[in-house]
Length: 325
Image (cartoon, rainbow, N blue to C red; front, side, top):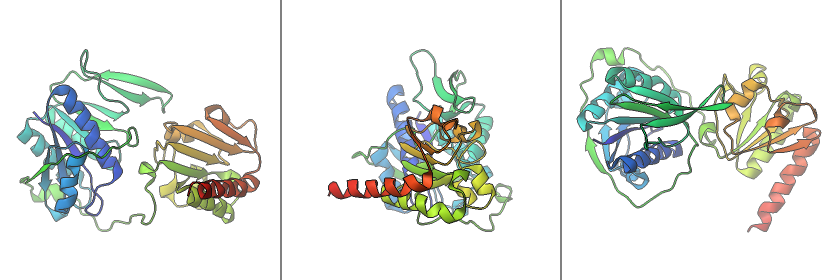
C-alpha cells in the first residue's frame, strides 16, 4: 500500500518542486507506516530517476514512452491510475501546478477518490485525514477531512524546504496499455522559457507594476533581480500592456507563487494580485502612494519613488554581497 506521487520532469530532469512533492509524500508515508512510489513519465535518465530516492522515494515506476515528454492529461491519468492500482495505493500526491490541475481531478474521478487541491501542510491523521488548504484567495484556511478510501492531494509548490538525503530508489519499468484515443490531442509545439529561474520555484522574486512608468525602466528591476539572484515577475496590467511577457504575470489570473522574499515595486496591491503572492514568506513593498493597499499586506514598506530607490537598493545588495566573500 505505497503512497503514489507524480514526479514531473522537464526535458528529462527533475526540478525542485518535484523533489518537494516526493518529500511531502514521504512525510505522509512515514505517518502511515508505508513507502513512497514515484511515477515518472517520458524520457528520463537513469541517474535522474535514481536521484528521487534521495528525497524519499523507495521505488520509481518509469513509463518510458516518448509521447509522454509533453503533458497529455488523458495519457498521464491512465499511467497514474495504472500505477496506483498496481501498488494498491490509498493516497496519490501531485503538484498544484498546470500538470497537477489537469491530471489529479481525472485520477480522483477514475478512482472514486476524495480530493483536496492546493494543500499547504501535511495531513493531520490524528482523527481522520484532514488536509489544510488556502481558500478565499488566500485570505483564510480550510481544513478538509477526506473520508473516501482513496485520497488525492495536490501540493502547493514552495510550501516546504527541500532537503536532500542519502536514500536510494529501485527503478522499475511500468507498462501501460495506451491506445490511440489516449493521444487524441497532439502537441504541435512547446515554447519554454530558458535561462531563468521558474517563477513557481523561485525563492526570491522581484516584481513590477504600472508604477515603473514604462518598459524602458524595467532595467532597474532587472539589475536588482540579478544582484539578488531573483526571478522577475509583474502585475496583470503590465503584462496586458505588453511591457513584460505573460509568463511573468502573477496574481489571481496569473501564476501563484510562494517565495521566501517577494519585492513588489510600483504595484498597488489589488486583491487579485495579492491572491497570487500572499503565500510569500516575506513581502517588501516599494511605492510612492502611502494609501496603496499593498502596504497593509507588507512585512516591510518603503515609501518613495521606485526609480530613485531601486538603484540605491541594488548598490546596497552588491556591497553586502562583497562583504560576504
